[in-house]
Image (cartoon, rainbow, N blue to C red; front, top):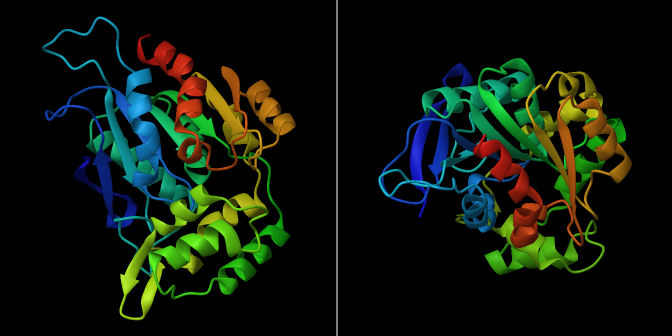
Length: 296
């Protein structure tokens, strides 16, 4: 079971971090920080963490020093068990400052950052701005191009169609996995993903996040491209996409070309939630890269 750690983020926002490192004793020194995507939470990394620490095992570790790097997942502001203050900032700068605070306060640097979707954007922006804190980077299914204003309107309309409150977790799981108009074919993993971020209220089940805060959080990649910051990342970086995900192959390969030390991997049959839906295939895709950067 993961152990909770508290972090103070930008503007004093309280953040929950979760230590997934095998063994009871915390370790000092460079580690791994996992950053979930928009609407996610740290526990969404759970299916992949056991594979991750297996892939990241340091060969030749002594019995007196654990063979795995410290592995932490952060609930980003507005998500999971972290604070969701109405007046808080949900800018790119705030998310990046929070990630830097987690690395510094938990003593993880120089860290290997693994980010999914929005968390991947946060990760590469931190790597660009604070290269002293980041040793290596894994970008999971996140675009560098702007999505356009129409995307934000579609998301706002989508949030309005949610039939909240849900009568039960099963109802939430069924809607997101089968009944949501955005679902082309039944997707149980998607249903499970969203069921995990529901909380019970007197009238039923609602998301733990504020949809308006989520819309604010995604504005910067709706209206702005992030190629310039990507090109400033100097550490080894792996770009991973699901074959049916949101990051197209051509854009992913262009991201690898722009990165000074970029590499590419893709996961067949995976969609946007690649690490959650296909943790074994995800481990096979990222394992060789992690073995290289965590033992160098």
